[in-house]
Length: 210
Image (tube, rainbow, N blue to C red; front, side, top):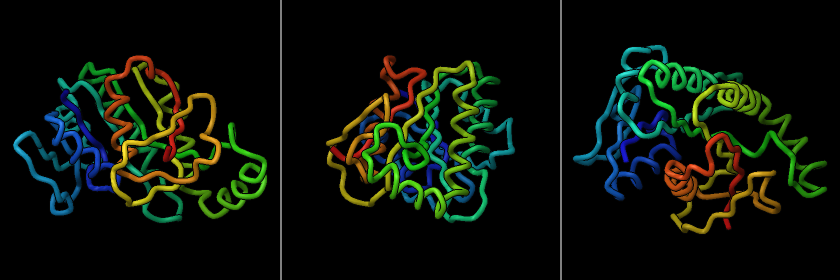
């Protein structure tokens, strides 16, 4: 498989690159600062480009089987990084004639499937503390869902830096009940599985540690 990763220097993006290379996939990593990409490999191509550089991004996604947008805000201030990434990825895919896009969002802004306490106590607090990153993710989802491409939106809960376990719970009709966290390495695992799973095209899936 040939894939392009937006946000390749972030926690999830780095794990996607590592696992994809280990599995023998060809990976194109889009980065702003190549010094922050602590991954090497013969099957790795690094493209230094901003989200506004449409030509470079189009070339970076051309001929690839899937594009994974793993961008995320690092702070709680107002942000459009996920939305900007979605716009850029969609525009590049359209220009290149590609179709498959996976977007990493979050389960936090959504309550379908949650238990009473999570829905009525935890999520309202999270919604206030993380209102700006959450608003960015909701907007990005809306953009991707309205597109004509073969998208999958993946919503993990709180991200941790634990080891890769491969034990992942997934649910397409709401959040995973009692699933409050997941290791970034397992999010990457799920993304790579989902990339070649046609049953997940145009689906929104919440995941959590199993």
